[in-house]
Length: 466
Ligand SMILES: *Cc1c(COP(=O)(O)O)cnc(C)c1O
Image (tube, rainbow, N blue to C red; front, side, top):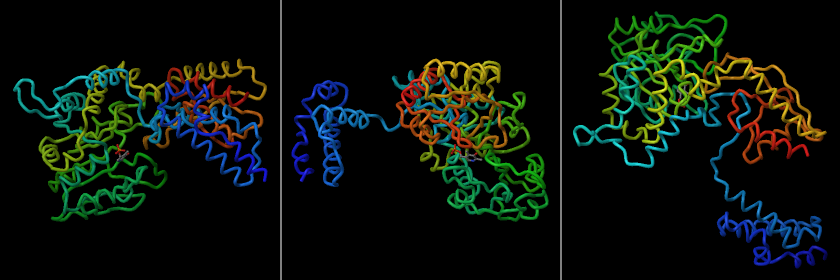
């Protein structure tokens, strides 16, 4: 049979390894992976021949097999967690790592992780100290909170708070706030795991102060407000304000907590975005405890920040669970450096990538889109067509779901490739480019591009369209 004779012509592993291409590659890629690459390619060819598929004899030469094996070895050697180009225009993209760190935070991370630190060492006393002091002071300074604690993420912050303050007791929450955040964080489930008992009040669209009051018994441990950050209710709708909840909490001597979710220290409404309650406002309106994420609108590393009354924070800190949810030193380093930037309200918008991207002026986005389109057209590839158009970005991270800040998009099409195939091709690149598919069109939103990304996009499209 033809396959049999071709099978006999498959080169031997050693023959392929001896090819110059693989010999040279072995300097950069571990030999074990080069060998694995060769084996994978040979196995693939053997399977195709067995299957009776046509394989041209010239595809079986040691040089051709070595070329494929080199590609395979390079793929195997690539780290699993890689940087990519976010051309979606979703600033706090949870799947793409949420916030990029500010330069100052990156610098601090590198410095403090190359050296020993006073992570849990009190330099004045010359004795064991606490890791939490490093950010508690600046958090209090920036927000007016009495005390602060940071944990691994906001899910942990909510869990630790409920467990510490309300295990075995009832927590009253409006039905309209029993939200699910992406990635399986559901308020009712977290509540159940914490040992607190959920007491839902009101209806999906309307909750009144009397609903809370009617539910309060001697079993009530906490009043909880959850910021419904990732969806919006429009129309016939009423929520009880934090100030109203404060009055009720005072009357019945109950603690009041707000899970702010995205939690911002900056009011974005001057930038044409919806007015979101800031962390400072939530505290001033009377929340005894406020929790929010470090890597959403704050623009820092993954963390869960808990602010509020010293007596409550102390109960959280002393909970043995806190040890299991604690923040690591890499995060602390990046978080402290990020928070320091907030001391200068003018410059912070420029220095923290998340804030800068959210507030980018439209004229700047237009200029950048035009520049990208110009570079793509300059490739002079007949199959590639490029246009710029108006569009809308999203804040992401479950924050401001209705906000659609105006942006400038670059639409690209490649003759002979459907938009879906083009999207796949960009995603398969190295580094990958994540674009937006909308109404059957492939769109690049320049809002979330950082330095060097334009070049990556130009090269990726040059490859796909030539
Ligand atoms: C995002 C979010 C959380 C979870 O925060 P992580 O930092 O992802 O753990 C909890 N509650 C709300 C309201 C959120 O928006």
